[in-house]
Length: 387
Picture 1 (cartoon, rainbow, N blue to C red):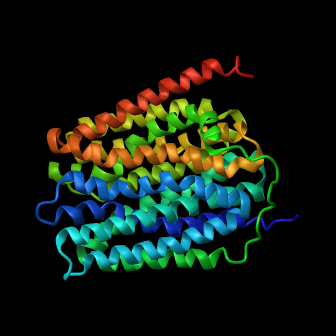
Picture 2: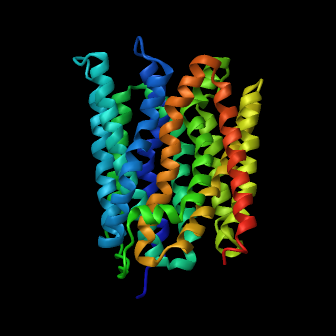
């Protein structure tokens, strides 16, 4: 089958537009929640992290849809749910609702956002790998991440600007419109061929991929801490440029994906994941110890450069561990490990911030990245014996 070579840029642009729905609100949500009297950092962190909890429980569902019905159907459903979720979050601004009622509506919207994210990302990876072929799996995952975190680079400061100069309702209205544009963009792309064959239980797949999954989860702690609390770290320290931390992170992330996205397919995922985790650990340590916004921004840049290649590198290892008919299910389970880190980090880091300050949150992320690097070293040492 001859495939339009523009499919990957178009899928990536659609994902970029949809993921702005997440990125635009990521820095605004904690500030929005903290503006309500009596709401703590724990509740703000929960509002940031709850979509990732939703994705944990829906990755298997998304993977099954992508494997059985095609990634194209999975991704399209996700784009529609993105729009519906942002519309629900917009209802949290209704003045007639009491504070905890507004918070409940916001949480419900962000749970739905997590389901949309799960369907959209798993669908795109299944669709993209199906069209490109398994030898290009690392490239497809690199483009996926470049789209996602490119959205973070743009969405961080823009989201704060829209929230501060307009309102949270306007921010959510814009966020609801973007995935619908993405849906129109991919409407004419062909479906990928479906693979048939034996399908193993989800828990069997999770057991096969548990070690790469744990490593990507440890990487995710630092990213989740940065996304939820970097702007508050700047505000607490009295620094300017609070919205630019995610821009530095996202710019480095996208640059590394574009420059090094071919490396996992060429030299092996573990060899790329190890230095990436070490760079992430250094970046988070700089944010922890920073005494100026410039140092913190350098730390955010290094964190983005380090985080960038961890997921596609370890994802290439996951793809090699499972048969083709279970590829999307395995990638969904692999993503669930990262989602678990995201979901748990928000409230736990908020608890730590309430007691020790925002800087200590980034020390926690740095230590977790170092643990992830140690695990990858162990996998590298065991790899020759396992083949």
